[in-house]
Image (cartoon, rainbow, N blue to C red):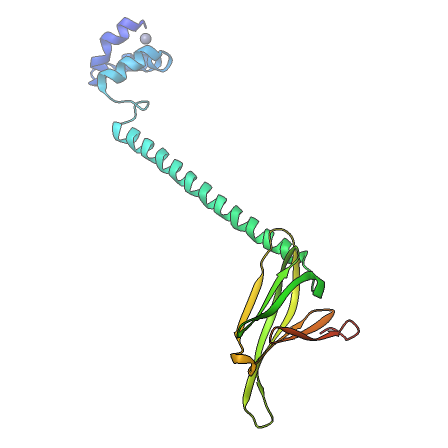
Length: 209
Ligand SMILES: [Zn+2]
């Protein structure tokens, strides 16, 4: 069948007025002829290849949502990577840290400014962790005559990313009140009273707990 014959028959074919023989011929032709198939689809406004407009819009909307979802996923992945890097960083900081903190790892400054005793500790090339415990100093009659703060060094972390100095101040009320800092390092225990170093004990021979 030729294209123009098919096209003459297509209106009747669409209205199902053509004979069975013609239908078979037209079907056969439409299967193989792209142009007539398109012509038929445009004429009837239907056909499997033509998507209804609503569907096209939905498809575009769906694609947009997929893009947004992809972007949200990417953002989440980036956040997770940043957190993981931070965790790793901290972990490296801890794992390269030493459980020994020597007195020489920390630069100490202490003294008195009028009625205030001060102590500053600056770790050399890193940071350290310590536990702190404060107790009252009492005389034989039970009067509180001062405070003693024990600072036990726990761990030293080297690295440029771990830094920090710390300081304490305490009023000593004209010198009658005792302010004592006991600094326990892995090798030495230093006692600073009212801004003065009063004892320095070597503890390297003592068992470490
Ligand atoms: Zn044709």
